[in-house]
Length: 287
Image (cartoon, rainbow, N blue to C red; front, side, top):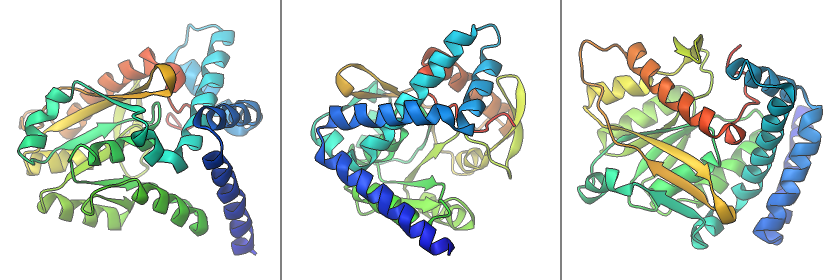
């Protein structure tokens, strides 16, 4: 019975993605934005988003909080509509690279790095964005229970890559093995660092201790790799800007993984506060 339900869910999503690909990009984005803004607010995830937003902005008026959350649903809808058209976004030069000089030496010398970003703007463009400027990398994704949909999403993501060396791997024991092997084979990696990791360490995030993944810091220290933050932001004319911040190292023996992660959290807190409507508030990050 479960497989039958999963299959019907797959058919619905497949048809929606097919419709998105038929429509002009701006029309499909507006359509998805309308759907998510309208029906998302009727879901339990909307309560989570409002609760999270109020926690981060305790002095903000109710109307402003609801406006941010509504725009967050808008951003999520646009991101979903863009997912089956990742190649189109790059072909139409909808992805803008900013401060790429911060990683010029890494690209020129074919060196490794650990790239980090958060669920802001359209996070799905980051891996293919790196892949297309010559950075071969592995990236971890969270698999979903519906195996039909999981295979569809993996296929879409994999088809957005131009290098045969770059890859996605599902979170878990397999990803730990795949990423470690990739690092040993001179590949880079991308980690989306703002989601709850139930097996992670407790680290302060917006002044609350939350379960956080710190495994990438152990790899950075062990293999002496630079960590490069990427800030992604929606800008005018349907474009997305990827900004490469200055690389840093986690090689000071007096700084623990938790201390470094807290420093990184301070950085992404600023990103979220500067563009709150583009963050994924619907995730149960603070519970």
